[in-house]
Image (cartoon, rainbow, N blue to C red; front, side, top):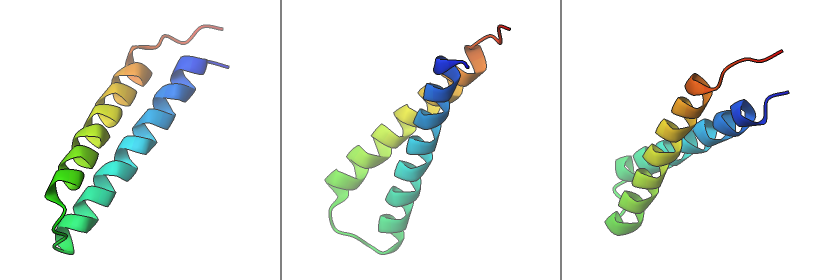
Amino acid sequence: MNIKRIFGTILTVLGIVGLIYTGYELINKSTAYTTLSVAGIIGLIFFFSGISLVKNTKDES
């Protein structure tokens, strides 16, 4: 059981959820652009850090 890989997967899923939320609110023409930009930036950070954590973690038996 590799904790880093699980944590990376959780970060990736949270990033995807944040990006979907941002896109959904932008499509519905929400007026809170500051909140959406913060949620989008945090979603991008979570997504890319989760992807890199999963990619760089070596499998050890």
